[in-house]
Amino acid sequence: MNKRSKKLLLILVWWHWLGVRNGVRAAWGNNRRELVLVVAGVAFLMVYNLASIYSSLMDVAPIVRSAWHRILLAEMAATMMIGATCGRLCGRWAGRQISAAWLAVLPWPPAERLRAARLACFTVGGVLTPLPAFCGWGVGHAVAAPHQAIATAALGLGFMVAFLTASLPGAGRNIVADADDVAEPAQPRVAVVWRLVERLDRMAPRWAGVWAQGDHGRFISRWWLANLLAAGGAAGAITLTQGWIWPSVVISVVGGNLAYMMALVGAPLLSPVLRSSPVQYGVAWGAMARAPLALSLLWSGVAAVPALIVSGAAWRQALGGLGVLMTLNLLFSVAVAAVPSSRRQAAMLYVCLLCVIIYQGLEYGMAYGALAGVAVLGVAGLLWRQARRRFRGHA
Image (tube, rainbow, N blue to C red):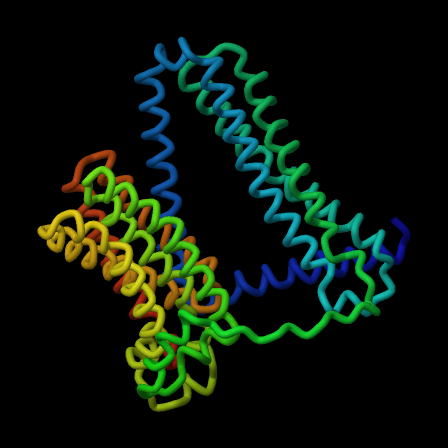
């Protein structure tokens, strides 16, 4: 790598470092108390759950040691799957970053950019490798397994190999491209399913959902139909053939919630035009959520039809599932309100909140699960209040 390429790579690294530093400074300067509370709570939960898992492993140590070789193979397979998934995501990220528009005009040869992207993947993989190795060492130490050092090294090596194998091809994607190639303009296609709910956008504030979605409606339509045919059709077939209503009821809740998650976009709430308008925060959120909510309820209703065909009394379970679906949609709305700029981060926050409830319910019983649900709803209320204040510039 020549001096010019090294300088450009350092500029790219420094640019990302400044972005991270500015983000941390902004979070610390605007919401110090909330940030300290969240970090302390997350750290406490992590330490508590790790200690609980370690204690549980010690209790079943003889059983684990008797099947240690099979367990180690299962750990290796899981570690390599996780490494391949992380590597694929990292490779795509590196390819996008190194092919950014502001870098395309710089005198940086494609081969050097490819080498820089692969170096970034190797660095990220090296940083992440100690995590699965530490987890493997913790399991081996808790059960006093033989050859702990070898098992730890094997898990780390397996993660690194899978990570690099999956990341390096993706890092070179779109880097070596012919700038003279002009793509044919894409023919517009009608978003069939999205057109069904566009009429809801005629309510005030008008066309907020279309504004939020942009060109995303076509993807939502294809995803909505494909998931309904695949997941809803499979659950419906089980229900109709086995006479068991729960597959359709459960998939109606899960699929309806996924449809809501895929369609809801909160980024327009950051628009200065919307924030400076006299519209209230709840009304603005209703405008963003009414079309995604309609798609969610429509998906859930269609998927629950086989259960109603099998048993006329299944309407009780269907109504219960509808209540659960509305609660899950509300919780995801709060997560998007807390992080309106990134739907991926909002989804991660939503999954973490759900995992807290599910873990407490499975580990300690339904009473503790309900208590965890009440606590999560309380946290959701605080997040919603903070988002509402931020919408008007009070935080």
